[in-house]
View 1 (spheres, rainbow, N blue to C red):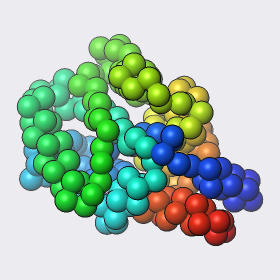
View 2 (view 1 turned 30 degrees about the horizontal axis):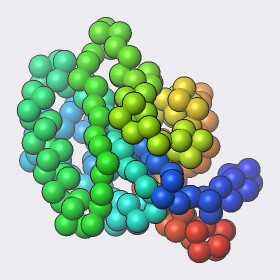
View 3 (view 1 turned 90 degrees about the vertical axis):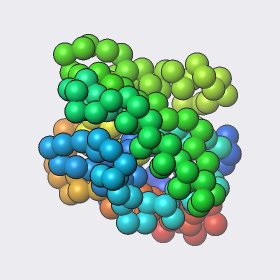
Length: 197
């Protein structure tokens, strides 16, 4: 843990020139184990997620959500169902003064061998094309799984792991661990106030 404490120093340099990439399920909203959020009625924000997003939105210049949505390929939901979920989610974000730059999703299955499904970096690459001022050296990706950490490493950006996986032995180590998105947001806020602990 000593190394992680030393690395917190980098948080004090974050400003509006930085980009935050976020996974969705398990980071922003509750993940349905062995299933998928297929409609808005199943979508539930994680405790503290909205407050975290409000803090992060005031710090980062861009917040981009990248999410695998295999349920579409499996026929469990349609792309228009996902559109409704994201539209409602963004509407609530706006009420909390949270600005989302863009949401990218991969609708494919494992067997499709696409370039967008994490841990492939296609969604990040698309973001780079859409926003040419994104600097990967000033980017962080927050996820709740080893796949997310591998995605970050494949893209060459800082990785943050949140949630229940933080206590498990992982083959791929993230740069930072936090219990949840709110703890991550608070740590950055403290670092920017020069209160690095």
